[in-house]
Length: 193
Image 1 (cartoon, rainbow, N blue to C red):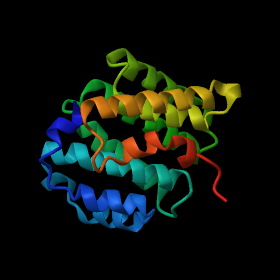
Image 2: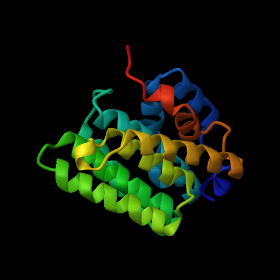
Image 3: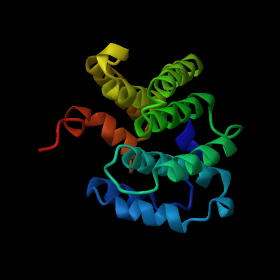
């Protein structure tokens, strides 16, 4: 499991998780910008990429003003460098997310990148249909994909429920923002007032 190697990482997961709970993503930005990727161990890089994924999701969604293409390109380069380290299912889920980010920021890329994101998440499931991170990413993709293009909010909620169960079975629930997002998906993805 991805987290088993991450438990001893030198990344302040508790502080980053607390920032996520408080919706203070400036702490994530500072962490990402002040951490030197090349100085991290592979285990720390695998943990870093998860926070980078979460931050880039907010950037591509327009919730945070930032250099969208630069952030996505950096995320993609970091992910590529982990292609032999990460388990296949999470790696393909991250690739699906990268495609979804690119689809969000470019109307020209919307359909091709959206389709590629779907292919990548299906590949992740072929590697491991019970991988909680892949299920979480699948839930996010399904939630935001219009029904006309195959999205389903009902199916997304099933993915989140399954992800929650597998995170809990693996004992991967402490300071895990992906777990908390999946567990609270019904309120997390509710329209903001």
